[in-house]
Length: 101
Image 1: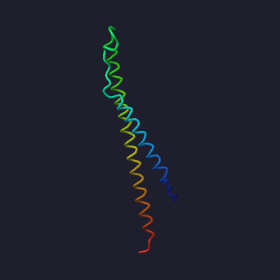
Image 2: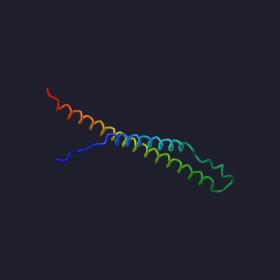
Image 3: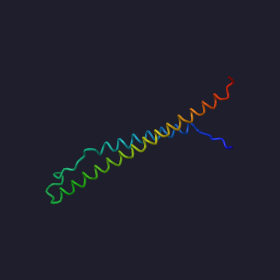
Image 4: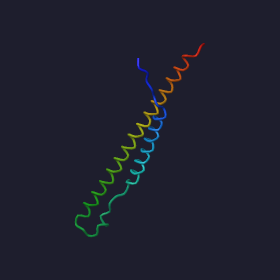
């Protein structure tokens, strides 16, 4: 029977990295929110309204995508944390099972 080996340090480093990346994606997404294009910035161009609408749509899409990325990474972080906790609990149980009563 093969023995499973877990590198707790590597799992913690992975969790920390994912957490950091999630925060960075969230910060980028926050920079997008509520940055709506104003048609007046394009002067008297006939299609300035359409261009401003496109800028607004791009802004909203960017904010949504970065928010989604942050949420996925937060879930990954939580899952790694659960795995670490379960591995630690199993290891503790196994260690205690060898103690003489």
